[in-house]
Amino acid sequence: MRILIACEYSGTVRDAFRALGHDAISCDILPTDAPGPHYQGDVRDIINDNWDMLIAHPPCTYMTNSGVCHLYKDPSRWEKLDQAANFFKLFLNSPILKKAIENPIMHKYALERIGGIKQSQVIQPWMFGHLEQKATCLWLTGLPLLRPTNNVKEEMMRLPIKERQRLHYLPPSPNRWRLRSKTYDGIAKAMANQWG
Image (cartoon, rainbow, N blue to C red; front, side, top):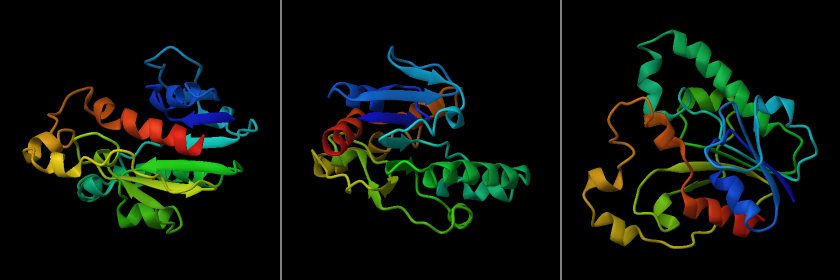
């Protein structure tokens, strides 16, 4: 299959599909972190190039529930929220028949802006062998729900909260967003094995 992994600089999901023989390419405005097929530029340049599947990771800064409190502190965030929602809808409305769009849990203003379309599924890293909590929503079209592959919740719950929610407690830094946005290997492999 020809698979477009949109808004991915890490190559994690791309490489999981390529390992199974698929023609997968990542796309981001940033260069890729891992060697492999990557389009550095605007995804709108290539989204209509007859893909069999789309997996998109649009930016979530202005749409995530954890950041809703900032909307009232900084009025400029409302316009950025509108832009982020329109970008998200680019993927929702794309003509690609099989697609998965990934984002954290959205606040109500973001959901309103994408037409009130709720996620198909909420997954956690611990469902795929990672000792961490980070709710991730998937909006699916033409694809089945992602089945857990290695549930380690009990083991994870024995960890201190700051360890199992490591990404939430990361101190401010220039690379915090990069660390928080990378897809877990276990999730990427489940996507490739189950959807590929």
